[in-house]
Length: 323
Ligand code: AMP
Ligand code: MG
Image (cartoon, rainbow, N blue to C red; front, side):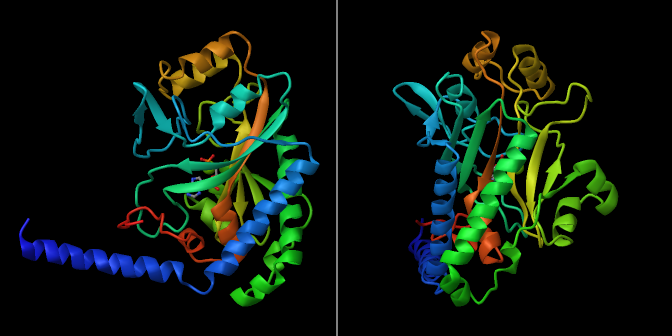
């Protein structure tokens, strides 16, 4: 590399350094972070009161979420064995509930997903944290009740605890006034009403969070056997254009169903052979669950333009990173 190129590169890097320092020095940031801290505090309180056991996160493992959308691979080798960095703890959640002594669990789970940069994307980070819940013998309705209760508890808590932060951020709290059970809409219904960008359009048209149900996606999301081609899974959509905040589903747990769904979606059976073995031995329990993105909730609560506005260091896909 010539000296001229080297010094030009260094100049560019110093600009990134300057940008990084400016990002972490925004006066809004400590208020946003305090609200986020209060969110997590309220989540822990709610979970504790409901008897849900907190599990520490797994961050690398031989298996991780197969994810039905493209992200770059980021495996590592340790002790001669291949590990993936956790994309989500879905399989670990199902497997740990095979214990007769664990029924309801959650993890404040760091996930790495090396997402493709998309122009105008305001809601993806390449690493984020989700509050990931799984309950044995639960159905969609159990999870809807549980998560609606959680969101109401968290929002009431932060309205009370974070009044100074909202004042400093110059925003009100009426978007946190949750009424009644959330509406439920199917993807088909909203697509027919709003067209292909239905999630965004419906979110913009709404002032309350709502459930969006029936998505064809991960193999482990249960198909409704009485109604083939529909799925017992769901997203929670934040209103006012903040879109998806949570995803979950009832899970496939029976051996033949898992194999059928994996084959349909061309999932790699070999890397999941021990998970499949548990299903074959009848050891995977019937569960349902959901995970909500902490940064996405913080963004909605603090009404920030981009998800990257709630992080200290940029984790937005497509940037230059130095820290
Ligand atoms: P998923 O089950 O893949 O939808 O992930 C659960 C939740 O985590 C989502 O509903 C989002 O709230 C959050 N999440 C997923 N991917 C990202 C990402 N790349 N950046 C920020 N949050 C995310
Ligand atoms: Mg999702």
